[in-house]
Image (cartoon, rainbow, N blue to C red; front, side, top):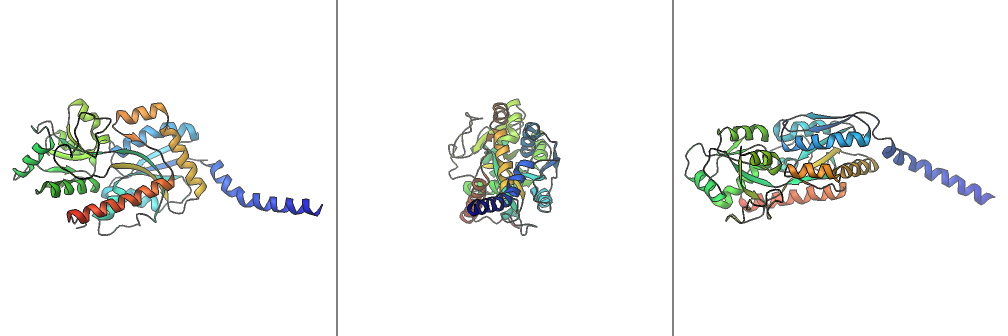
Length: 323
């Protein structure tokens, strides 16, 4: 009899301790969820958010609001997340600039690792070199020749600090000075590129895929170790005589620091399930995006790996981007 009472007592204690953790996942979400996109409408990150939102809203049976908070290469929107409660109702969908800002800013208003909870890698999309429809360049070497031979005009437009770093790497490896023109976001850079106000640009496939297919832009090189499944006929930079590894642009989901582990796992799992839906995957592929959907731990490891990769690239090339 005493044994039964003893067992019941400890069963109640254990269940009471575990219940808050179970309840976190079961109750979420019970109100509107906001996803911050720290880039301009029409940018790759924004496109991804729009594809996911409706499906996720159906799954959660809640309203999801996408809020564009562009500026300072995603820092403004990221800082807004840092100040939010870690309850899952404010999330951030950010690109690889989350990593590269570490190397292009003298000081950040947050810690790249400690101020966020990585929730999952949403998708990847290689960097590409694109040219305006007015340009006669049809491959990477012609672009480099035009850049070398131009005193003005044939500059390379970049929409954020990750593409700025990629442009710097291209210049060092090609042993030529590259004039980089920074824009406040990828969308305005591509608008100027299509209008012929800048001759060349560096972007992601996701941001340029539709314009390339419609003839408004020309993608002449995939800045990746392998050709893209979305653009199998476009050769890589390596194939065109510019050796070396290039990082891959990615899109990831973040929460504020100190999120409950059970809540983080639930959000990550739900996003991954949406990404596995055939119509979502098909839409991503049509945008030149490779859907992923992994765990918080795997995404955290990817971020740390990319930080090391960029650090190594900057050291190898001698670039100083934090000026």
